[in-house]
Length: 272
Length: 304
Image (tube, rainbow over all chains, first blue to last red; front, side, top):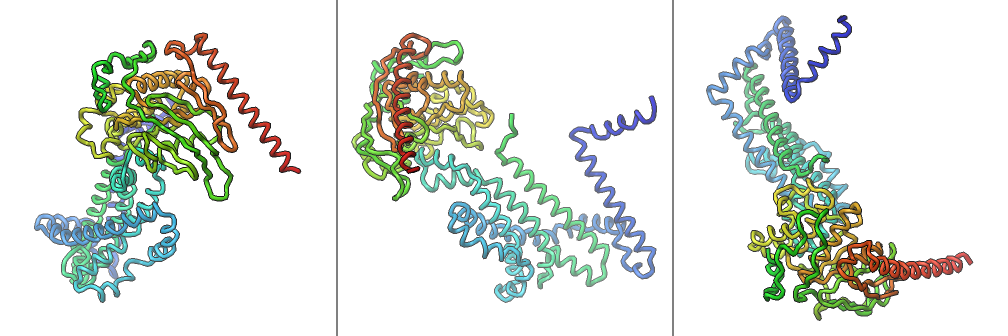
């Protein structure tokens, strides 16, 4: 057999890994990222002007990360951040879901609120920082407010879009069978839009996690944002880079967890 | 299973119908269900001087409708598209209020939907996040009779030949099976009347025939009043004791005629079925042609 004939066969083997293909490609992607990081570290280490930042390289970073894991520092720095993000998401959902349902159900309210809400959505959450500092007694309160301001819009708009997509026949059937307003909400609307709400939460989580670090530059003495700021001030660059890795890993894990919940709750079956 | 358990108060031995009298599990081979009628527990309906316009200044879609339906009677509302038959059915269900006149069920004016008169729509519209049993139980849940679910739902699903599908997701069923779930969902709250809005029109001919036969058998066995909206003359002859033919623009009762057939003749093909089908088709065509002629005259006037 000629070489030309063997090339497609090899390619076929590579792409026919089946269910493991995603995992293999993911690992290749991580290896590529580590390679680029290592290359960057090598360039920095060999540049006399940048030599001070050599601890950003993978080896010192990962060594430091391991020691932070063993000492429990990762948990102590992540806990307050997760609590703030969780609270921010709860407040965002507590406002976004009911208002989203109202907007989705009532075209008049949608018309009234669309421009103001779209306007507010386009304001960077961090630009509320001075107002948050003035409005809240504690730094924690201000940070949670900023996270909630970032997270509310994806939840609200996703909920409203989900409500608008509800099959009107479901509501007619429920009404026909004697459903009152509470049954209509609990047995029809909320199950029908559960996935939309969670998709909104997933988007909101991403935005909230991005906003978290700069928000934690505000006054507080705990959390991942504070840890980044503290490491920069103390020129502790391997700790800074390790904290960045922790932020990435937690963000990825949270997104994957919500993604799995969305997949589990998604009631749309593939056509058979 | 005893059908008497499905109907409130239908407990006298003379009216008890065993599960074996109900449609068997093989639709292709079984004979039409025996026309044994339970004591009539169905609703009595009186439609009084009913007229309706969708908007205040629009023309009437229904005008001066008057008829009565007896307890346990099976009536077809037959008419061409746009004659207002579905609108009329929505009014019987309490989903729409008429502009004039009223619908009276068992002596009370209909103001809102009730689990006592349940409508089945053209599409089954099952809740896709629920199982077959959960879908069937919705009416009981909504009417605060959740404690009856465990006892009633398996019986109802057996009645519609879906006992083995209780835990399946509604989306995994065929169109005909989904419509059977919709039927179970409608029957579970023990209604006095079922209102069917062309519920079989999206199904293939074989499935449609089976469901027509089974729904009629179930309604008769349970003593339900049944009102079917259709534009299919064959369906009207196959299912109804009586056919009310509506003419369009505006919708009025043009003919009210009984279908005099035995259950065997209704199965189709027999001489009696052909006779009634031809007779009703004649009535239907005459009314349709008269309406067309009226439209032509109206168009001529408009063009003048």
